[in-house]
Length: 268
Image (cartoon, rainbow, N blue to C red; front, side):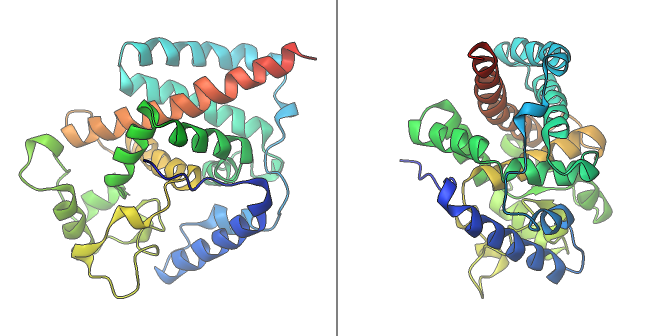
């Protein structure tokens, strides 16, 4: 059974402390890749104000959401992830409380990662043990998602998944051995979660919590690789990452948050 490590209202303070720990881990790698996380720790209040998304916004966003659903039903995961992310990112940018950072993608991702309703939705899906739970478990087993530019800079070929004799663990070990670090992957805290003294060959995704925050940061890395990271859709590994990311985001965002907002509007 999939263990749910989602967040509950009484653990907000613990979440903020965790984000601080993440930011320290990023700094230890020489680069503050968790810049948005370091910023978001300043507040222990809600980071998203859903009332800011008015009917005018949803009239536009729903066109992208409908496209997402259509292609997702046809198992066209590449456009499904793109369309879903466009609407999701636009929504977070509209409802984020800190308007000064509303145009910074990393801050938006960090804000959405801390959101209680999204975390609760993800947790519920894990506990249901259905298709999304299976996708999330499989997705974590492939973590971290390496940044395409980092692979290119270190002259590391993309992982071929089913077409390669190299396992994901072997590929992961090779990437870290050749110099990739926390700033080159998502979630960026992957190394931080490994027990102290663990050898690179023994790094295990199971040590990373399977919760909404870590999953969203991994999805964001998949998104970055597709939008401007130089990854193609030809490789088996890329296709699997895109499929899993699209399925999970679709379940939390398309089938969870959007229906929730529609119900709230109808009840007013």
